[in-house]
Image 1 (cartoon, rainbow, N blue to C red):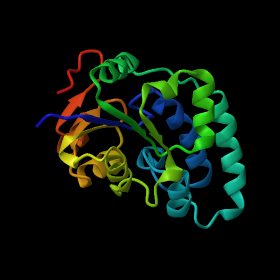
Image 2 (cartoon, rainbow, N blue to C red):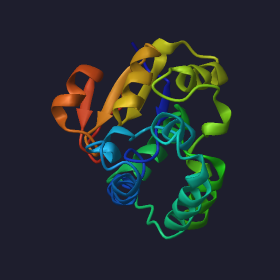
Image 3 (tube, rainbow, N blue to C red):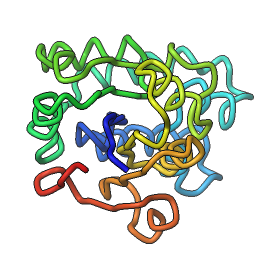
Length: 206
């Protein structure tokens, strides 16, 4: 099958930000949910709304405080490309492959990305954020929405993901799944992906 559409998650796929988020959420989770072991790992790939509704539903008075702390943290984050990611995207554009960012991040966060990388939007044909989807990952809505935007069949799409929820969403969408081993142990990726790569430096798109 020839793939003509490439769909990318952002954190842990395009940018190597996951270690920074692990530090932030590790601090938050130890403060508010110390009884749940490794919660900062469990929430990877989830939207802020989903994290709050699942794990902080009884702490609504703390929402604004956590959001403010997260916003302050993201302002000082470094959005460094995963090795080969930008070059890979440019190659796809040159070949006429459809490209879209499909992220659970919201538009406010994306403003921080654009400030650090003013040319970021030019790397994709379309950028989808959390505001564009009715249901967050692991529901496949985000990837099916992207395929519909390009008017392509799911079989022609390749998804690049790193988190368990993101990989489950891509699987549920029925698309070819490439896992980035930047966030989750390889053993957990095996059953959720068709290929596993460490970065884009040597990856050949087919």
